[in-house]
Image (cartoon, rainbow, N blue to C red; front, side, top):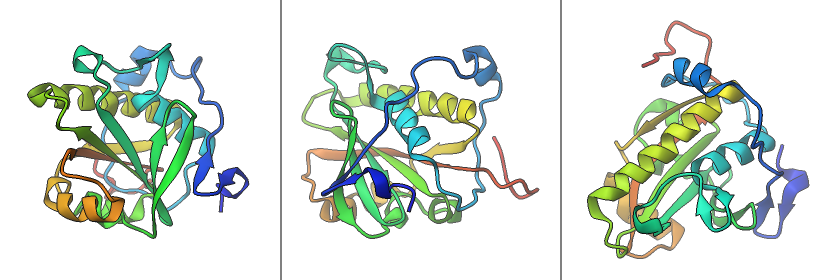
Length: 200
């Protein structure tokens, strides 16, 4: 298991994310696409750390890389791997285990959700009163992940299908409350080099 050396108790210690260099931003934007066919090859822990930081890490003292309305910072990012589900803790740069087992089926209905090694779930605290502004923040996080994946040689796709439909089961598995609202999910992995790798 690629994470073995970084496992601590009920979580995973992430390496320091890459915050400089990489593909120039306009090149990354030009190459942005959605991948819908993935291999089962594991995503390196270093790459996962960089992706999570790009989605919802801190780039200033108590300020995130993405905007949230009134700086509420009311989102959470869950990481669905083959063996467990984790919550991303940006303050400590760790993954906190929330559930054992493979629960990728809860964040999508498409076959690629089950074959790709990583799925992110974007959750919002619906008591923050942000309403329709929340999807804007999630969209910013998802686009950051697209650009990070492009720079790292990975594929990804964001979607809402299968997320709200499984909200009750997600709350049960992750021990959440009704204030936790699943907004969208994003599948990440290495793209299959085949004709059936549909890209948008």
